[in-house]
Length: 194
Image 1 (spheres, one colour):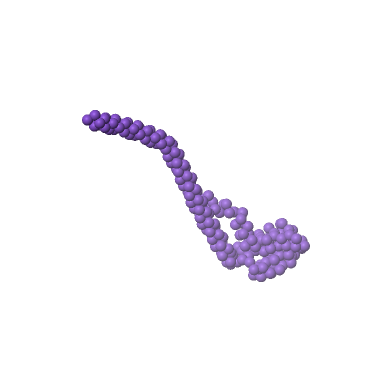
Image 2 (cartoon, rainbow, N blue to C red):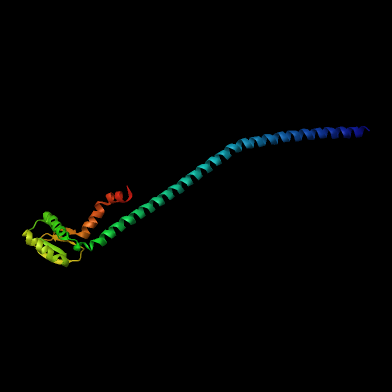
């Protein structure tokens, strides 16, 4: 029986030793897990912060791109309206000769050009349809100038200096074009309240 008691004592001692080892292993495993979790949490937090920042940056880029695209579309639409206004104005110029005040308009355009160039030796270019009206105006003003009916225009005239170094473009189309450039901000303000 002594052997059986000895075997039993060894088994009990071995079982206690196994329990101690298992307990120590569990404690070490728990410590390793706690240590890993404590190290893992800052890493997870850093990844979350990085991901949040990256998402915010991407969101801002997308919003900025969408705003810019929208702004460009609005600008394009406003420019189209602006251009349409001037296309309509140009189309309406075609009937200005039938207006009772056209003769006075032509006289004002001539006066402006002559004020810039003087009356000596100027050459006036205009549309054939305005030739007789202009000759009557020149006669009334007692101005002698060469008149060349070589333009196709809605109205108005171009006046060249005698040496052709200087010219005053004073057709209705050239004035409309100039007005389009000069008054663009004012017209935008009227059209769009800007």
